[in-house]
Length: 225
Ligand code: HEC
Ligand code: HEC
Figure (spheres, rainbow, N blue to C red):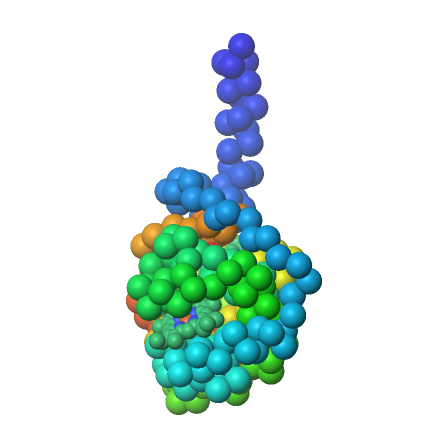
């Protein structure tokens, strides 16, 4: 008898809503049900990955360190995330026709080898030029969020230093190309990303952010070593 349980649920509601994570997730729209096919590969070979990724440097920079503000670096990125994104482009689940064409030429083994190659490279230097006060605003949001507005601290998932997690498929977000970071955060604010085990996560995290805060966070991430 469902009515019997109603008082208990009402009692629980304020407790649940007091948790910013839960509250933000509740406000978010339901995720689009997208599943990427699992990749099939044997033990990744970074040396082979280096050969297969010679053509990437033209856009992503030598050694996977981008000098272009709109293009993400690949050096030092967690392998599980690079695999997932290449697989998402190949399945045309992540938009961007350039990367969809690049990924269309890759086998599952290529993807695993390339991801292992870039994960082993040293990340590039921090981007310079962001205003110190803007960066500080981003740093505060990153570390603490804003509980009064149900904004989740980014560090909860990405780690205090922004290093991400290979086992949880959480990207490293240090040294992010600033214009790419801002554009990607704006996209997450409007849409639920694809294919991730927790597709709501970034949408929920970005939902309440103002344009000014997106700029501040991008400035901070680009300066994060
Ligand atoms: C012609 C330019 C170009 C080439 C060549 C290219 N990329 Fe990209 N790549 C881009 C751009 C631009 C983006 C950002 C697209 C977006 O916003 O989805 C991107 C995004 C990515 C991402 C997502 C990164 C992230 O942080 O989410 C990965 C992974 C990637 N590329 C891997 C590769 C690999 C591996 C190669 C070579 C096999 C390659 N790319 C070749 C331009 C290029
Ligand atoms: C609840 C966990 C969670 C929180 C909190 C979170 N993120 Fe994320 N973030 C993720 C996940 C998962 C992805 C990968 C999404 C995907 O591609 O499906 C991601 C991806 C990203 C990316 C894309 C990286 C790339 O290379 O393209 C950026 C940038 C980012 N997050 C920044 C932030 C910022 C800034 C905050 C705080 C406002 C934040 N995240 C809070 C889980 C989280």
